[in-house]
Length: 376
Image (cartoon, rainbow, N blue to C red; front, side, top):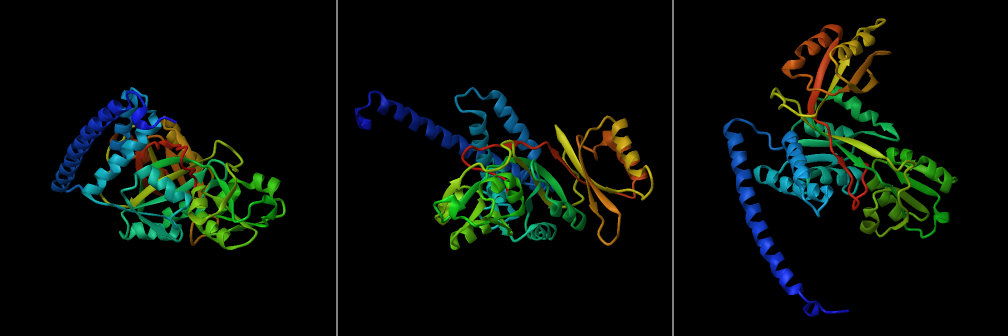
């Protein structure tokens, strides 16, 4: 094999790359100074928001349109997410609560979505995430709402009714689950640990390949990997990177029952009286209750139909403290609290017992890194 010094033209190419790296460093420093100026301008105007998902979505879309290659769109997006993450940290290093410990699918999805410059705070469960955000202990929270195979994470929906938080952004992450164990043979596995969602996502594979194994639901996929690292005959379903972290063997990759397997995450913050910024390609989420009488839900659905607004999700959850009454969670494709939808919102308030807008935000990007498998 030829040594680098023996490869014709290599030294000259490296000189050119070094020169471009110096230019990039200068440009990144200029960008950072402008980012600091943006933060100062916001502070003078009384705007404490550092993270602006609509602005970042517009920037990434513009870069994708102007990208001449050979870097593909996913590479450009990953690079700029880290640049924007570092820029936000210059203004303020925001704290983000997530389902811990470090190594869960939520952790890797949050880093992919927000960049590595945020301060990620592990929480024991969803309740702790919501409490820490509502109380101001953490600036934001990163929570899974639903999975394309296993459905709704019901606890997340219930907690919106219990805490004054709102949604700032959404992200979709592709899931690729792996089976991790100290064992080297699948036949030696008799117990499989994971969070209930990954176990559900891989139910058919587990029934087919480990029909006699005991399936045990635990608090997170990272906790499952830790248990598997300490027990003979145990395995975990989770993120492949935990194998290297804990010295486990990867017995199987991509064991989810459907290759088109995605988890929808939302970023939440404490509710406030500050108006939500205008959003292009917008979605809104809301909670509402209706009178317990015939046709009440149908009349609400008719309101959206008459105004030409598409409803993409409708979820009912039992109302705490009552029997057979329900709170409805809905996603709609519009800025529902924008002036042009004032009539729609007023009709909602007239038809419902209660209405609460949980936020408006850009329709989320689909993050599909080939280096990290993601779910939660």
